[in-house]
Image 1 (cartoon, rainbow, N blue to C red):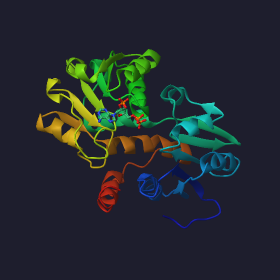
Image 2: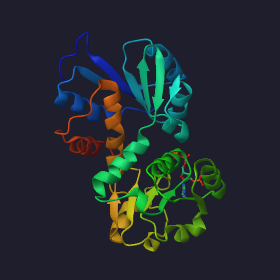
Image 3: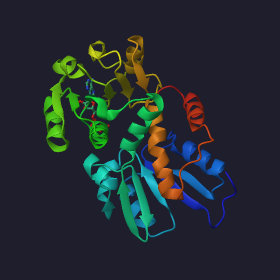
Image 4: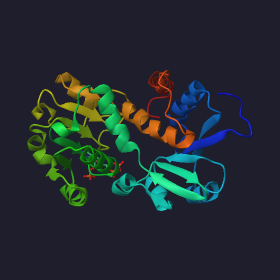
Length: 285
Ligand code: ATR
C-alpha cells in the first residue's frame, strides 16, 4: 500500500462478523498493483450501526462500501437509487456514495457468471437448462443472473418446495422439491449449490449428482473449503467444477471499478493471495 494521504480514496466492506473477510486482501492488492492512491478497509457494524454508518458516510468523501451478511437487505433499503439487478435479487452487496446519494447494486450475479467464464471454458448459459439448489438470497441472485444471461430454463430445487415456488413465481423458472431433484438434473448444463446445507457440519448436501449429464458443470457458492464436499462429489463423478472463490473475486472486480474508476489490473494473482489468507485461518473461521 502506498502512504495514505489527504487525497486517499477510501472504500470498504461492512458486515458482522467481518474480521475474516477476504475483500480487503483483494482490493488492496489491486490498488497497490495499479498504483492508485486508495485504501479499502473492513468495518464491523454493531447494534443498528449499519444504517447510521450509511447515513453518515454518504455525505463524506468515502467512496462507498461492499456489504455482506447480515446487511444485504438493509443495504438495499438504505439506497436512493437501486440498480434493477439489485432490485431483482432483493439485496445489495455494493453501495456507492455520490453527492450525498446512495446508489445500490448487486454484483454477485456478475461474479457468478465471471466464475463460470473463468473456470468452465466454453460454458454458455444460453445452451440449456440450469439447476439452482436452494431458495434463499444466494439462490435468488443466481436465478436472476442466469435468466439475465439468456438461460432458456432455470430449475429451482429446494427442501421447502413452497419457497422454490415463490421464487420462480417472482423471477421465472420451474420449482422442484428435493424428491424430484433427479428429474431436475436431466439434461442440465450446470448445477449451482446455493444452499447452506453442510456449512456447519461440512457434510456434502445429499443431491443425486450422478443424474446430471457428463458435460454438466457443477458449482458451489461456498469457498471454505475451496473444494467443498459437494464439489468433491462432482469431481469424483468426473464433472467439471467451479468454486466459490472465483465468484468472490468476480463480484469484487466491478465493485473495485465503481469505487476507484477503473477495472482492477490483470497482472496480480489475487486468487493466490486469497488462498494464502484462507490457509492462514484457523479451521472453522
Ligand atoms: P441465504 O439467504 O444465505 O441463501 P437462507 O435464506 O438461509 O440463506 O437459505 C438457505 C438455503 O439452504 C435454503 O434454500 C434452505 O432450504 P429451506 O428453504 O428448505 O430452508 C437450504 N438448506 C439449508 N440446509 C439444508 C439441508 N440440510 N438440505 C437441503 N437444503 C438446505
